[in-house]
Image (cartoon, rainbow, N blue to C red):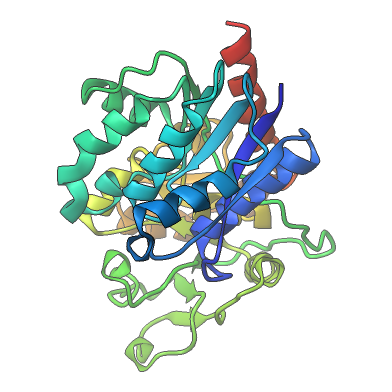
Length: 340
């Protein structure tokens, strides 16, 4: 029996979707000795049925009867491709399918909500499903998911080395790694707090004039990003003021959260996000209902309180930088599939 895992190529090098799948597959291959099934991102509609069939045969050439295939979803190649791939491998006798769900497009984008039933029907072909949170699993069960075996991921890993000689300092600063031009992050341009500076990973914009906003620059390299966040100190912010995205953050695993923790800085998160309880229980930062509350807590915080948080983050971040969340969920998935 072999264990295979899909992995996408062809996205922009700064794509979070690409990094998440690549890092998962790299760890699965290098640590767990899984075999990789490479998938290139392209316009599926350019393929005739015969061309698509040939392409799929090439991808699954290493797969055999009785194997396990971990399918990282979505491939971002359209559901037609995903359905074709799963249909193809389902013909192998005794083969088991694990769906590792990174994102669900019908939940991410309100305009795609009409496709939720279709996506759930697709998921129901899995023998086991890996989902970001228990809340997402409960939601999908309520909407018709019937897969009995499930593993909860909880957090993304962020396997990037950091400069341990740089110690995050307590500053009245909130760092935000995100594009301020996106509507879901419009709170950035509305920043009006005088006592706490917002530092954005973007190039300087005229819209920030007269506001307490700084710019860290845009980083294509994750090592440079984590170094900049670590040197900046203060906190990392996971936030949105978009109602649909806020609802999705209640269920998904947030990549920004892992980036901040990997950098070694405490976080500020909404009380609604999936891993809110972990942040509070492990004292990794602040869980708040509003930015007003966050700013107020920072303005009244002591050096000792901040240093206690950074000490907790330093310990917890070892899990994220060494890939233990991925190792655990992949190992648990195979074990549960074959043992339980």
